[in-house]
Structures are given as structure tokens and as C-alpha cells.
Image (cartoon, rainbow, N blue to C red):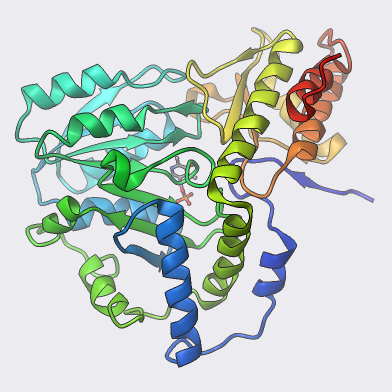
Length: 380
Ligand SMILES: *Cc1c(COP(=O)(O)O)cnc(C)c1O
């Protein structure tokens, strides 16, 4: 027998309620039945996104929502500030360059978060900048961006703030309306406890105005078509029906637990993981760590891919390795979506055993003990 445990920052494990919903017979989308379900989904999404505005849903991976934010708000040669602090920030730059924007790149050392004061300075120097693009949880490094402070800065300018919350939504605080975040993009396979395939985007009133002036080419991703349909509880094209049905179940689970408790659960799992890592004599890679995923800095000379493979192939526990320049140098353990205290213990235990197997002098059980202290508030 080879049981598998998924501890990656997307895709994440599926709750049984979601899996059952996915197995239901397909229904037609131009029906009262689907309409009612779609209304329920849209209301649930507003709560999750913490916004009174519409949240648009369409079939694509999360990157589709990132692209939608670019093509719906901007026009060729528009000046934009794009923060690149990891693999997913790089994607903003690639999108900006693909669409011929005048990109001001903000390169941040991987593992660090962008300084809000730098964004403030760049906006002062570039009053014509139309948008600032950042990442709530930079999944490749495990870094959290201070969205609240950055939103307070962009709110005083003509620029909108676009946040990639693909891994952060439902795991970390993001008060969209209250903080003045203009655009939030997300995807289904991370904190939302669904398979990949749905993308989401919300727009503030300030961002909605930009839909009227944007001239970048778009067809499937044209949010005006989605808005027109949404006002009739409909979709312009065939929606991903089964995923949307399953989304009602995921939103119910989040609602039953309460968003505040969901975020608290993630914060506790993250803290337990960080304490465990330190107890094992290792370092957390991120200077301001996110609550969706913990990146573990591996000691100089350790073969990171061997560690990853040992966990996956010998212990059945799949974490994530490093991406780009971080390949082999970090290990990322997710605590995201349908995961709880026991998943953290499992991940840390597997990490300890795998470290031992590859010859790292590990004090077996020390990480687990540190995690238990945080997770179960055990003092001894
Ligand atoms: C996973 C992820 C993406 C990419 O999403 P896809 O669904 O693979 O397109 C983008 N940004 C962040 C921060 C992510 O974690």
C-alpha cells in the first residue's frame, strides 16, 4: 500500500463534501436551478473576498485572472509598477511585457518582502502610473506582502492596487474594501479547497471605471461580458458547472467555520510549522513569512531535491521544492485550505525522518514537539 499525502501550496487536498459534489450528475447552466446556485456562489464569494462589489468567476487557472486584470484595466504603453519578489511576481512582469505596458519593475531579493516606502516613492516619481501589481503570498518564497500599508498608499493616488491573492485568499487577512484594495485575483486550487480550473477577480469602483477606457485586446477575458451576464445571474459562456457546484460546498465549509476562524487556523498551523523548523536547527527562508506556506532554508550543501524525493517517494508526503534559483535550496510545506493540526504534525514528522535518512543530524521528535506546543497549547 502506498498512501499519499498532499502538502503542496496548490493544488491542495479536497474536503469529502467537495469530492461528493464533483461526482454529481452534470446539470444544464441555462436553467433556474443553475441560476439559483450561481447567485449563492456569488454571495459567498463576496464574503470571502470581503467586498461589496461583484466577484467574477470564469474557467481558467489563476493566471487567467492575473491576465484579466491586465487586459481589462489597461491600454498599450500604460505605465505600471510591478513587484517581482519571486516566481509569481515574475509572472506580473511577463504579463506586462507581453501586453506592451511601460513596466517599472521592482525587483526584490527572493525571500524578502517589498518595502511599502519604495512603492510610495515610485508613485511620487511616477504620478502617471496607472496600477501597482503585487502578490499577497509569494508562494515561491513563502513571503507575505504588507497589502494594508500599500493599499493606504495607492488609495491616495490615481493608481489602482492589483493583488495576486491566488494562494493567500482564505489563508491570510485581506480586507478588500476596508483596506482599499482595488483588484483581487485568485484561483480555486489553493485556499478554496477545489481542484484547479476556476479563476476569480473582484474590482473596486475605482477599478471598474478603468474598464471603460481600457483598449488592450480581449475576448474571453472581457469582464464587461461577465458583468452583463452576472446582472442576470448568468454567465457569457459555458461555466465550469461541476466546479461551480463544488464551490457552493467549499463556501459552505468556510462559512460554517467562519472566515475569521479559518484565518486563525492557518495562522496557528503556520506558527507551529515555523517553530518546528527552528527546533530542528533549520531556518525559515522568508523574512516576513506567509501563513499559507512555510519555506524552509536548507543548510549549505544539503541536496534539497533528495530531501523532497525522500519525503515523497519513501514517506508518501509531498511537499514542494524550490523554484527557479531556489531549486534544491528550500523546501516548502503548505498549510493551506483543507488542512489542520494533524497535517502539520505529519509534515514535520516526515521532514524529520527524511532529514535523518539523507544523513542530516536531526534530533528526532524535536520538531514535532515544538509544533505540538503551538497547535495544542501544550506547555511541558
Ligand atoms: C499558484 C499561484 C499562481 C498561479 O496560478 P495558476 O493557477 O497555476 O495559474 C499565481 N500566483 C500565486 C501567488 C500562486 O500561488
